[in-house]
Each structure stands twice: as C-alpha cells, then as structure tokens.
Length: 352
Image (spheres, helix red, strand yellow):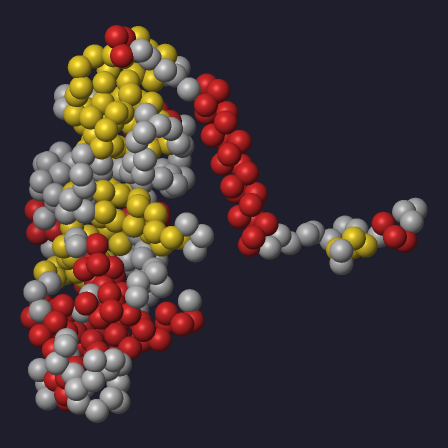
C-alpha cells in the first residue's frame, strides 16, 4: 500500500484524472510545436539555387507546416518546401515558386515569395490574436435557414465580420421549402432590409433545387467561402450547387487517406466553370470579440450616414440625448431591428 503522503499530490488523489489549466494546455501546445519545428529542421529539404528552375507563379491550395501544396499555372498541384523567410502563408495566397530538377522527400520545389493580398480572412485566437486562414477571397456566402431557426442577429454578426475584412457578402436563405406562410412573411420582411441597404439575397433549397442554378452562377470566376451556424445546410447546399466538388473532395480523400470531414486546414477547390471554393472548419464561423466597438459600429453600413452626427462624441447610441441613430430608427429611416442587434453584439463583447 502506498504511504499516505503519496495518496494525494497537490490536491489530486490517486486514480483521479488531472485536469490541466488553460495555461498548462497552452504551454504543452507550444512545446509540441517546438518539437515538430526541430524535427522539421532536421528533415528539411534544401536545394542550391543552381538546382532550381526559373521562378513560376501559383496559388496555395493548402499548407502543412513548412510544406505547401501549390496549384501551378498548368493546373497541376505540386508539394513544395517553404523558405523560412516566407511567413504567414495561407490558402489562397498567390506565390512565386521554383521547381526542383529532382524529387526529394516527395517535394517538387520551393515557395520563395508571396504576392500582396487583396483580402485576408482571419480567425480570432484567444492566445495568438488574429490568425489569417485564407487570402484573396472575393465573396462570402452567409447561409441561414428557417431550421434550426432564422436569426437576423447571427446574419448581422457575419456581415460585420465581412465588412471588417472588406469582402463582399451574399445572404443565402436555404431550406425555403420548409417555410410556413407565417414564417415566409416574417423572414422575407427581414431579408428585404438587407436588400435595401445593398446586400444580395438569394433563396434556395438544396432539397428541391430551388434557386440552385442562380446560386451556381455566382461562383463563376470568384473565390468563395461558405459560413453559417450549424444546421443551416452548408454542406448539402455545396453538394447541390457544386456536384463536381464532391468528386474532387473524394479523390483528395482517397489519395491522402483522410476522411472527407477530417480536414483541419483550409483547402482550395478549383471549380469547373472557373473560380474556387475555400473550405475549412476554422472559417465557417466568426467571432467578433477581437473587434473594438468603433469597428463593429462601422460594420453596419446603414449606420454610416448618421455616424458623427450625434450630440455627444462618446454617444453609446442607447438612451443618450441627441443620438442620431436612435432618432433615425424612431422616424423609420433606420431599421430598429438592426439597431437592436447592434446593441446585442456590443453587450456580448463584455461576456466574451
């Protein structure tokens, strides 16, 4: 039998599973990353400049540590090493790379430089701040549906994130075949608000193929991302609108040995009609807690004509005297629902 002094160590009894603190988990993750980096350095493939070809241009399909898959101008995907001078490389980046004359450790070249990004999609991280996960995105499809429940508050959260990133947003109402008459009236009234302030809205059903052709036409020559809360039908919608994508994902999964839903990094999927879809669990949902209040306010494009016209510069747009936003909402010039959603988002920042 163990001596009594060994039965309890720092409050943990024998047989009790020790629960790590967030700080301990973070340190373990950092140490693991350092070990992987050292292992990578030990196995890194290096080529002399003489063994590399002339610079070529390509697009990052996906990144894995110090390696990346590059889509070449010929439409082939080659795996390359990444120069240590290249930082923050993400899916969608346009890069300059050089081809090796010999295949070493499965690598076919080196990524040497990244072109300036036109847009950047980031994911907030509680430890690392903002982490870029995709670059050069043209449009974000914000998917909503009557089931599990239509929520314009969630739509507004996504739109704020899109406005902050400077990426065009398209609102997609999926599962329109499930709308009751009463729901249809309410939902379309709310969606009309977004149309009036300049957002495109499309109604579709992955089940009945309603509006699918219209949605499909929006992918041509554009780089797109789908976002939306769980249960709105993003996956079924992608399968209905882009059947060729399911075949491509299946081929990649078969070749890599990974299941279709086990990918943890962003990946670029070229589309048959031109353009591409970037998919990753990390960019399907947005958090806003990293944004200051003024950025969130600017994310409501219909607020812009009234900003700076309140009586007080530090107006919170609630019960402050002379608030231009509240006055506009009371007079019907500004949608009161959007203003209420704005306050809910601001209130949620303190909770997070």
